[in-house]
Image (cartoon, rainbow, N blue to C red; front, side, top):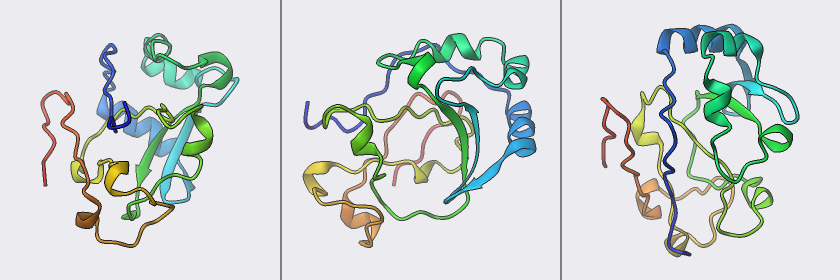
Length: 157
């Protein structure tokens, strides 16, 4: 178990119309650190009803995520990274999971435009990663997951 760094889960495919998603996002986005983002389901609150008008089955599909107290602890957001971020470990990640095994977050790559930006770092070769490691990415042994994206396939390094 300690060698698992990413574990895709089998859930119903989340089909979001690109144009509708971008229109919703662009009308509501706020800057947060290195991201533009829209928090569309805050903890202890329902999903934004305006988003459910666009995607009526979104609530049902998000409720299928395992190991999540959806109503009391789940929050969901759309994010758009606008700064080329250095390899890092999110400081909050260690506080969100009861053990080193996680999960600390679920990710669904909706647009998948810049696939080489999504990678994970194995703890075995990066035991001391902290917020913003300054080594070149290649020295960190990044793993570029091959995920079932549909018509667009990820590009390996």
